[in-house]
Image (cartoon, rainbow, N blue to C red; front, side, top):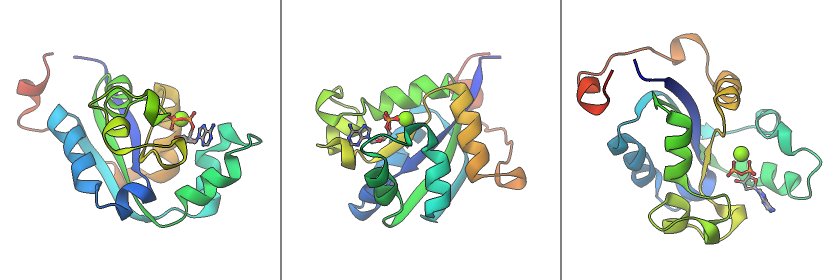
Length: 153
Ligand code: DAT
Ligand code: MG
């Protein structure tokens, strides 16, 4: 079996406000990643601070927490072989002006403070972040009929 990973992906409030949630989910879904959890709503400050704890103390930290809590987000967990790298490469570089054309941040973003999407950057941070947002039955294990056509064993 291929190395199946889970990643936490967030369509941030700018993506929601701009009506890009469907577009963004579509890119991951058609790539073959499987949705295993999804929730729409405004992330509260306490959760945002835990989620972005690695950035505490940096000059952009307060603005980052304000941004991610400024309105509803779409938070999801995606699963698949090498899901971490696959998702990060679909999202593109943190700074949209450095992101490769065809990535979400290049196609829809201009500035680092409105870069539309969060995606976990390692298997360990994926596990940590998924655990912050979802638990138990919110994370169903399900087999998809097309799995064998999407990835080899
Ligand atoms: P990524 O979201 O690509 O994992 P990161 O973890 O380094 O990037 O930073 C988290 C978010 O913080 C990023 O998506 C946007 C914001 N950010 C990062 N560096 C920044 C900066 N120099 N100025 C403003 N915001 C920044
Ligand atoms: Mg990050």
